Image (cartoon, rainbow, N blue to C red; front, side):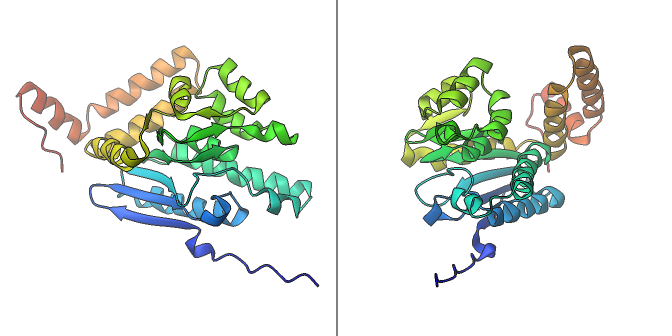
Length: 266
Protein backbone atom coordinates (compact mmCIF):
# COMPACT_ATOMS: atom_id res chain seq x y z
CA UNK A 1 0.00 0.00 0.00
CA UNK A 2 1.28 3.44 -0.95
CA UNK A 3 1.83 5.68 2.10
CA UNK A 4 -0.64 8.52 2.47
CA UNK A 5 0.71 11.95 1.71
CA UNK A 6 0.92 14.16 4.78
CA UNK A 7 -1.51 17.09 4.37
CA UNK A 8 -0.03 20.55 4.00
CA UNK A 9 -0.03 22.99 6.88
CA UNK A 10 -2.40 25.49 5.29
CA UNK A 11 -1.58 28.13 7.88
CA UNK A 12 1.91 28.51 6.43
CA UNK A 13 1.00 28.46 2.72
CA UNK A 14 0.67 32.23 2.64
CA UNK A 15 2.64 34.54 4.91
CA UNK A 16 1.44 38.03 5.76
CA UNK A 17 3.58 40.82 7.16
CA UNK A 18 2.18 44.27 7.94
CA UNK A 19 4.74 47.06 7.73
CA UNK A 20 4.60 50.65 8.89
CA UNK A 21 3.43 53.25 6.41
CA UNK A 22 0.45 51.33 5.06
CA UNK A 23 2.31 48.50 3.27
CA UNK A 24 1.54 44.78 3.63
CA UNK A 25 3.53 41.92 2.12
CA UNK A 26 1.76 38.70 1.16
CA UNK A 27 4.14 35.85 0.36
CA UNK A 28 3.29 32.60 -1.42
CA UNK A 29 5.04 29.94 0.64
CA UNK A 30 5.27 26.53 -1.04
CA UNK A 31 8.97 26.80 -1.93
CA UNK A 32 9.48 23.05 -2.39
CA UNK A 33 6.75 23.13 -5.09
CA UNK A 34 7.97 26.47 -6.51
CA UNK A 35 4.73 27.98 -5.09
CA UNK A 36 2.43 26.02 -7.39
CA UNK A 37 -1.19 27.07 -6.83
CA UNK A 38 -2.76 24.13 -5.03
CA UNK A 39 -6.41 24.42 -4.10
CA UNK A 40 -5.30 24.90 -0.49
CA UNK A 41 -2.93 27.74 -1.35
CA UNK A 42 -5.60 29.46 -3.45
CA UNK A 43 -8.02 29.22 -0.52
CA UNK A 44 -5.59 30.75 1.95
CA UNK A 45 -4.55 33.44 -0.53
CA UNK A 46 -8.21 34.34 -1.09
CA UNK A 47 -8.95 34.63 2.63
CA UNK A 48 -5.76 36.67 3.20
CA UNK A 49 -6.63 39.14 0.43
CA UNK A 50 -10.21 39.38 1.72
CA UNK A 51 -8.97 40.22 5.23
CA UNK A 52 -6.63 42.92 3.92
CA UNK A 53 -9.33 44.42 1.70
CA UNK A 54 -11.90 44.50 4.50
CA UNK A 55 -9.51 45.90 7.11
CA UNK A 56 -8.59 48.92 5.01
CA UNK A 57 -5.46 49.92 6.97
CA UNK A 58 -3.04 49.01 4.19
CA UNK A 59 -2.70 51.13 1.07
CA UNK A 60 -0.32 48.84 -0.82
CA UNK A 61 -0.01 45.05 -1.00
CA UNK A 62 3.26 43.50 -2.19
CA UNK A 63 2.65 40.03 -3.63
CA UNK A 64 5.89 38.06 -3.23
CA UNK A 65 7.00 34.44 -3.19
CA UNK A 66 9.51 32.35 -1.25
CA UNK A 67 12.14 30.03 -2.67
CA UNK A 68 13.59 29.93 -6.17
CA UNK A 69 10.50 30.88 -8.21
CA UNK A 70 7.52 33.19 -8.14
CA UNK A 71 4.89 30.68 -9.29
CA UNK A 72 4.65 28.01 -12.03
CA UNK A 73 0.85 28.05 -12.12
CA UNK A 74 -1.56 25.38 -10.92
CA UNK A 75 -0.44 22.22 -9.15
CA UNK A 76 -0.72 19.79 -12.07
CA UNK A 77 -0.14 16.69 -9.92
CA UNK A 78 -3.07 17.63 -7.72
CA UNK A 79 -5.22 18.38 -10.76
CA UNK A 80 -4.47 15.02 -12.42
CA UNK A 81 -5.32 13.19 -9.21
CA UNK A 82 -8.91 14.47 -9.49
CA UNK A 83 -10.02 14.03 -13.13
CA UNK A 84 -13.49 15.46 -12.69
CA UNK A 85 -15.02 18.35 -14.65
CA UNK A 86 -16.88 19.79 -11.66
CA UNK A 87 -13.64 19.80 -9.67
CA UNK A 88 -11.82 21.61 -12.46
CA UNK A 89 -14.63 24.13 -12.87
CA UNK A 90 -14.52 24.94 -9.16
CA UNK A 91 -10.72 25.15 -9.14
CA UNK A 92 -10.59 27.62 -12.04
CA UNK A 93 -13.48 29.62 -10.54
CA UNK A 94 -11.53 29.93 -7.27
CA UNK A 95 -8.43 31.05 -9.14
CA UNK A 96 -10.42 33.59 -11.14
CA UNK A 97 -11.94 34.92 -7.93
CA UNK A 98 -8.45 35.58 -6.56
CA UNK A 99 -7.63 37.58 -9.69
CA UNK A 100 -10.89 39.53 -9.45
CA UNK A 101 -10.25 40.26 -5.78
CA UNK A 102 -6.84 41.71 -6.65
CA UNK A 103 -8.52 44.08 -9.11
CA UNK A 104 -11.40 45.01 -6.83
CA UNK A 105 -9.63 45.41 -3.49
CA UNK A 106 -8.93 49.05 -2.59
CA UNK A 107 -5.21 48.47 -2.09
CA UNK A 108 -2.70 48.79 -4.92
CA UNK A 109 -1.19 45.34 -5.58
CA UNK A 110 2.47 45.17 -6.65
CA UNK A 111 3.86 41.81 -7.80
CA UNK A 112 7.48 41.22 -6.73
CA UNK A 113 8.66 38.69 -9.28
CA UNK A 114 11.77 36.53 -9.29
CA UNK A 115 12.59 33.30 -11.05
CA UNK A 116 9.81 31.67 -13.03
CA UNK A 117 6.25 32.97 -13.46
CA UNK A 118 4.32 30.70 -15.79
CA UNK A 119 0.69 29.88 -16.62
CA UNK A 120 -1.47 30.98 -13.65
CA UNK A 121 1.72 32.38 -12.07
CA UNK A 122 2.08 34.68 -15.06
CA UNK A 123 -1.62 35.43 -14.62
CA UNK A 124 -0.92 36.62 -11.07
CA UNK A 125 1.63 39.06 -12.45
CA UNK A 126 -0.74 40.30 -15.15
CA UNK A 127 -3.60 40.61 -12.64
CA UNK A 128 -1.52 42.73 -10.26
CA UNK A 129 -1.89 46.49 -10.60
CA UNK A 130 1.88 46.90 -10.95
CA UNK A 131 4.84 44.53 -11.20
CA UNK A 132 8.57 44.74 -10.60
CA UNK A 133 10.77 41.84 -11.71
CA UNK A 134 14.35 40.82 -11.24
CA UNK A 135 16.35 40.49 -14.44
CA UNK A 136 16.53 36.72 -13.93
CA UNK A 137 12.73 36.38 -14.06
CA UNK A 138 11.14 34.50 -16.94
CA UNK A 139 7.51 34.51 -18.02
CA UNK A 140 5.35 32.18 -20.09
CA UNK A 141 1.82 30.88 -20.55
CA UNK A 142 3.09 27.51 -21.65
CA UNK A 143 0.08 25.27 -21.09
CA UNK A 144 -0.32 24.86 -24.84
CA UNK A 145 2.87 22.77 -24.80
CA UNK A 146 1.00 20.28 -22.62
CA UNK A 147 -2.16 20.44 -24.75
CA UNK A 148 -3.90 22.81 -22.32
CA UNK A 149 -4.52 26.31 -23.65
CA UNK A 150 -3.97 28.90 -20.89
CA UNK A 151 -7.45 30.36 -21.30
CA UNK A 152 -7.89 31.99 -17.91
CA UNK A 153 -4.35 33.43 -17.82
CA UNK A 154 -5.15 34.75 -21.31
CA UNK A 155 -7.87 36.97 -19.85
CA UNK A 156 -5.37 38.91 -17.73
CA UNK A 157 -2.63 38.72 -20.34
CA UNK A 158 -4.79 40.16 -23.13
CA UNK A 159 -5.72 43.10 -20.91
CA UNK A 160 -2.06 44.03 -20.37
CA UNK A 161 -0.31 43.21 -23.63
CA UNK A 162 -1.22 44.01 -27.21
CA UNK A 163 -3.46 41.33 -28.72
CA UNK A 164 -0.80 39.94 -31.03
CA UNK A 165 1.85 39.72 -28.31
CA UNK A 166 -0.59 38.08 -25.88
CA UNK A 167 -1.80 35.60 -28.49
CA UNK A 168 1.75 34.83 -29.58
CA UNK A 169 2.64 33.86 -26.01
CA UNK A 170 -0.53 31.80 -25.66
CA UNK A 171 -0.15 29.77 -28.86
CA UNK A 172 3.62 29.27 -28.77
CA UNK A 173 4.12 28.83 -25.03
CA UNK A 174 7.49 30.51 -25.41
CA UNK A 175 9.29 32.16 -22.52
CA UNK A 176 10.14 35.84 -22.44
CA UNK A 177 12.76 37.43 -20.22
CA UNK A 178 12.21 40.31 -17.81
CA UNK A 179 13.38 42.99 -20.22
CA UNK A 180 10.96 41.72 -22.87
CA UNK A 181 8.21 41.62 -20.24
CA UNK A 182 8.81 45.34 -19.65
CA UNK A 183 8.70 46.00 -23.40
CA UNK A 184 5.47 44.01 -23.69
CA UNK A 185 3.83 45.82 -20.75
CA UNK A 186 3.57 42.77 -18.48
CA UNK A 187 5.80 44.35 -15.81
CA UNK A 188 6.67 47.96 -15.02
CA UNK A 189 10.38 47.59 -14.44
CA UNK A 190 13.13 44.99 -14.33
CA UNK A 191 16.09 45.37 -12.01
CA UNK A 192 19.10 43.37 -10.85
CA UNK A 193 18.22 40.63 -8.39
CA UNK A 194 20.04 42.33 -5.52
CA UNK A 195 18.10 45.55 -6.18
CA UNK A 196 14.63 43.95 -6.37
CA UNK A 197 13.54 44.56 -2.79
CA UNK A 198 14.77 48.14 -2.87
CA UNK A 199 12.89 48.85 -6.12
CA UNK A 200 9.67 47.27 -4.85
CA UNK A 201 9.84 49.12 -1.54
CA UNK A 202 10.56 52.45 -3.24
CA UNK A 203 7.49 52.04 -5.47
CA UNK A 204 5.30 50.86 -2.58
CA UNK A 205 6.38 53.74 -0.33
CA UNK A 206 5.81 56.29 -3.08
CA UNK A 207 2.23 55.06 -3.53
CA UNK A 208 1.57 54.68 0.20
CA UNK A 209 2.32 58.37 0.74
CA UNK A 210 -0.81 59.24 -1.26
CA UNK A 211 -4.23 59.67 0.43
CA UNK A 212 -6.03 56.35 0.96
CA UNK A 213 -9.42 57.59 -0.27
CA UNK A 214 -7.91 58.90 -3.49
CA UNK A 215 -6.11 55.62 -4.15
CA UNK A 216 -9.25 53.60 -3.42
CA UNK A 217 -11.54 55.66 -5.65
CA UNK A 218 -8.93 55.98 -8.38
CA UNK A 219 -8.27 52.25 -8.59
CA UNK A 220 -11.98 51.43 -8.64
CA UNK A 221 -12.56 53.94 -11.43
CA UNK A 222 -9.55 52.71 -13.43
CA UNK A 223 -10.92 49.18 -13.73
CA UNK A 224 -14.58 50.19 -14.04
CA UNK A 225 -13.96 52.53 -16.96
CA UNK A 226 -12.04 49.84 -18.84
CA UNK A 227 -15.28 47.86 -19.05
CA UNK A 228 -17.28 50.81 -20.45
CA UNK A 229 -17.69 52.37 -23.86
CA UNK A 230 -15.82 55.63 -24.42
CA UNK A 231 -18.71 58.01 -23.61
CA UNK A 232 -19.72 56.00 -20.54
CA UNK A 233 -16.09 55.89 -19.39
CA UNK A 234 -15.79 59.68 -19.52
CA UNK A 235 -19.10 60.11 -17.69
CA UNK A 236 -18.02 57.71 -14.96
CA UNK A 237 -14.58 59.34 -14.70
CA UNK A 238 -16.07 62.82 -14.50
CA UNK A 239 -18.42 61.82 -11.70
CA UNK A 240 -15.56 60.20 -9.81
CA UNK A 241 -13.39 63.31 -10.12
CA UNK A 242 -16.24 65.56 -8.99
CA UNK A 243 -16.62 63.46 -5.84
CA UNK A 244 -12.84 63.29 -5.40
CA UNK A 245 -12.59 67.10 -5.41
CA UNK A 246 -14.67 67.18 -2.22
CA UNK A 247 -12.41 64.80 -0.27
CA UNK A 248 -10.76 66.44 2.73
CA UNK A 249 -7.29 65.29 1.64
CA UNK A 250 -7.89 66.60 -1.89
CA UNK A 251 -8.90 70.02 -0.60
CA UNK A 252 -5.75 70.06 1.53
CA UNK A 253 -3.62 68.93 -1.42
CA UNK A 254 -4.97 71.60 -3.77
CA UNK A 255 -4.64 74.32 -1.11
CA UNK A 256 -1.07 73.23 -0.42
CA UNK A 257 -0.23 73.43 -4.13
CA UNK A 258 -1.71 76.92 -4.38
CA UNK A 259 0.12 78.01 -1.24
CA UNK A 260 3.38 76.39 -2.39
CA UNK A 261 3.78 74.10 0.61
CA UNK A 262 3.74 70.31 1.21
CA UNK A 263 0.27 68.88 1.92
CA UNK A 264 -0.48 67.95 5.52
CA UNK A 265 -1.96 64.48 5.07
CA UNK A 266 -2.45 62.31 8.14
